[in-house]
Image 1 (cartoon, helix red, strand yellow):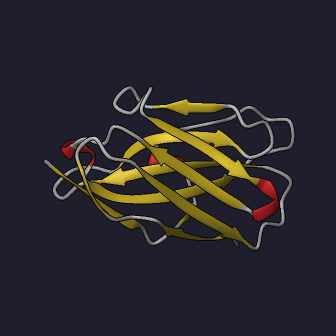
Image 2 (tube, rainbow, N blue to C red; image 1 turned 180 degrees about the vertical axis):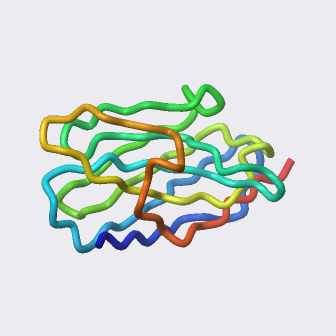
Length: 128
């Protein structure tokens, strides 16, 4: 089992920045795909960004490309999401997620159905 704990959510003005963190524990397998999702009230959970834990290849949804940056600190077992130029439409609960993959795999996904391990979420609110 992998446990994930998010932090860093806050209320911020439009145009501002935030950095979300997600600490992973009980990591026993060799590799994971890790991702950030978000869910606004009344909307489906949306994939924001994904990265390979071992190869650091990153993927972004079109809605955040150029504004958000995903990264990992393997020594700290922590996933980050740097969010710049925030917009009111970025307001949502943000979740980190992880899914095991075979060593050397390049599998990735921004579909929530493909992830087994989830954090509890951290709220990001962007005021206009």
